[in-house]
Amino acid sequence: MRSEWKRPEFKEVLQDGVRRIVLELSYDGTEFSGYQAQDNNNGVEDYLEVALLSLLGKETKVFASGRTDSGVHAISQTCHFDTTSNISVERFPLAINAHLSNPYVKVMSAREADGSFHSRFSALAREYHYYMKFNKNHTVFDNNRVLSIPFAITKENVAILNGMAQLIKGERDFNFLSLKEDYGKSTKRDIYISEFYIRGDYLVYRIVGNAFLYHQVRSTVGTILETFRKSENREEAVETFRKITENKSRTNKVFTAPPYALYFYRTIYDEEEWKILSSDIENGCGKT
Picture 1 (cartoon, one colour):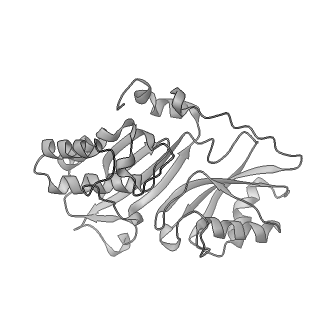
Picture 2 (cartoon, one colour; picture 1 turned 120 degrees about the horizontal axis):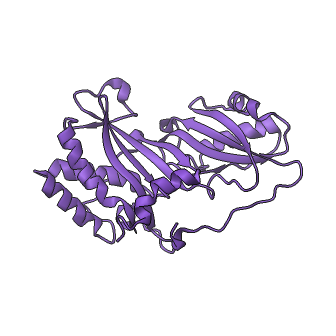
Picture 3 (cartoon, rainbow, N blue to C red; picture 1 turned 90 degrees about the vertical axis):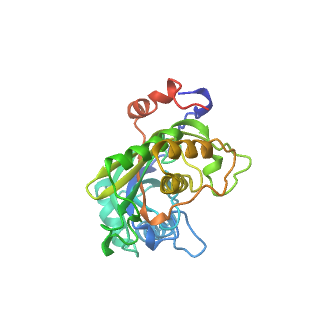
């Protein structure tokens, strides 16, 4: 791991009788104003903490591996909370789900961890998937789930898309893809995997990185798709996207894809898996 990405070792000593419970959630983002607690109390976090209040009889803070925007879904969002409850860890999913007032979020599993684990600070990588379909195959059941695209999903087209997707792998400043300036904080990120692939009728974009800026993933997908649509051939598409990646700030050539086709797929905590994912970066691939 490069020195600039080293994090201080996270080690919290839990008080006697305190347990750390780690949850895996899934949720339909169209029903929420994002993961984070909101003024209108419509964040996934709001519903989860209200359910825990009802279950445990006291206010309980939940910490998540990351935040998703309004409309973005989660296949597996990791979060944790501390409690003195003696409820068995196996019973927590059923017990919490019974107290959730919104059926569009569900606790899928629970496990217990010690104070060395933190959903956010222990995370080594995060993975998102973005789902698309050729508009002729897009059905009403794909509404608010899958993006309709105006070109056929062929191996040749996917090869062109991947020619652009590969350009953002590695360590670089991704300020040009962020929707808002984040002054005072680093806008450098590591992208370990950036690829398009075909799965049945679906075109899937997969991206794995150490972390992401605000709207970075959606802007990556949107800009690649728009660049492809306007280009006449592979060479033009790749060169146009390359020039966009060389900008130091966002331009009118960057497009943000809609949120409803984006899925927070998982958080990676396993160090051995992270080493494999980041091996190309360690060897100098993609540095700018």
